Length: 132
Image 1: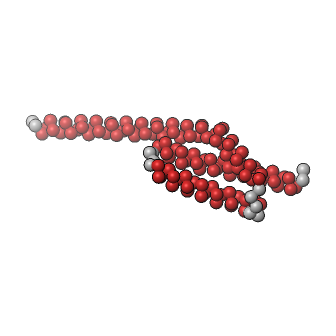
Image 2: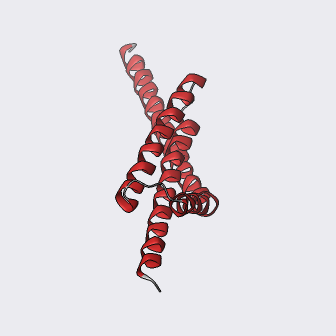
Image 3: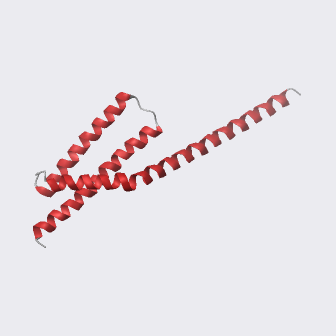
């Protein structure tokens, strides 16, 4: 295989990795939106920041690997990596994070409930003793 083809193939796989990282980054925004309610303008600001970061990342990858030339195989690699992650890994990743978030939220709710019950119990016992 030609050294040029090998180099382009390596750049394709590197850009696929970066495409996967882009979707991981967006998954974090999606998870944050599911955990905490966001207003419409906040979602717009987050999306704008996301696309600015993605644009800078694409320029950085093309600059580092192809002297700043945006090549089709770099874009295709990022697209393939993003699609692979989004359809293959992302549902499991997001599901796992949301599962642990909900379980942690339940545990904290139960701890708060127990501490409130204990506090009320002590309060009643204290008031009962004062009445004697």
